[in-house]
Length: 165
Image (cartoon, rainbow, N blue to C red; front, side):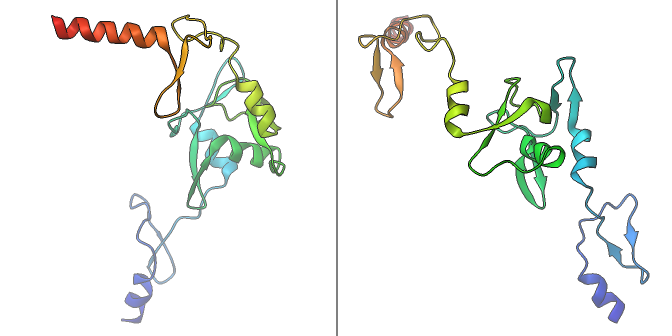
């Protein structure tokens, strides 16, 4: 009975293909692999030098990995593992512009202001359809977003044409 009580305290989330057992025959959890062992298993090496994360990507395209039971940014874990901690008040900027890259050589700690400035696209003078972003062409939606007036007019015209058909 005592052995059975002790075994019930052991977590049951072990791999059943090759269970680990202690000297009393109780199932034991597997020891956690180090980051150094886990990260390369989720990486595809590209000819450009990027270490493309093949694991889970968040909605913004950044790699995510559970570490110590908490989902964390894979590029931050890689940087911390092979370079060191990210300085206080800094973010990691992807110099390769590939958000899924976890190569520490492609990551640079920068302030939020620098990271934001680097991320601004050079074509901000036009919308995605090429209309110039002038005061007369841009309006603010009720949700607070900037929108292109000619694009909105085109969308309205297409909608009215579909309704008339």
